[in-house]
Structure formats: C-alpha cells, structure tokens
Image (cartoon, rainbow, N blue to C red):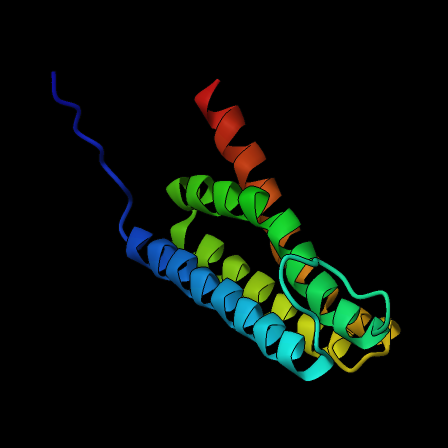
Length: 137
C-alpha cells in the first residue's frame, strides 16, 4: 500500500527551519564541550559542584533540549496549515534560544531572560496547531 502525502507550497521553509534548529542544538552542545574543558568538568558528570558558571552553560543546553521535542512537533504540524508563518515562528524560537544561551553563559542566570521571546514563536506554533486541529474536526 502506498500513501501520497501532499504538503502545501512553502513547506520547504518549515523543513529548513527544522534543520536550522538542529544546528542550534549542535552549537549548544559544542559550547558545553568547550566549557567542560575550561571549567575542568569531566564526563560523565552533568553538573559541577565547584563551578556555577559551567552549570549555566549546561542548563542553557538542557533547557533547550527539554523544549525541543515540543518545538519540532509543533513546527512540523503547524507547517501543514501555515508553512511560511510557521517557519518564521520557528526562526523566532531559534533566535530566542540562542539569545537565551548567550545570556545564561555569561554566568549571570538572570541574563537568560533576554531570550524569553523564544516563547512567542512557540505560542504562535501552538495557536496554528489549534487552528489545524479544529479544521480537521
């Protein structure tokens, strides 16, 4: 049995946004790896008892990973309904997560709040998903 999947024009932007998000998570992983060397935190330790600054790097990465599955699901499904708006919302999320990480990595956790605008992208994706779900009922 074969199934034909018809995606809307512009869905390629959604896919490109998903790929960009992978590079964002890879960048964060590299940042944690560099911080491990700088702050002398060996594997398999997730956090440091001695360096709160290292822990800021690690939390920036972990918090993004905690939100990542929801982001991808919302992005890929919302793209079926509104591909260009969804891709743009995804880019807002990615940019916000980068700003969040850069703020957190200063060692001053309060500076992570600069990236809170990422949640606006997530909210847009959530609303588009609700629109899609209601249309499919």
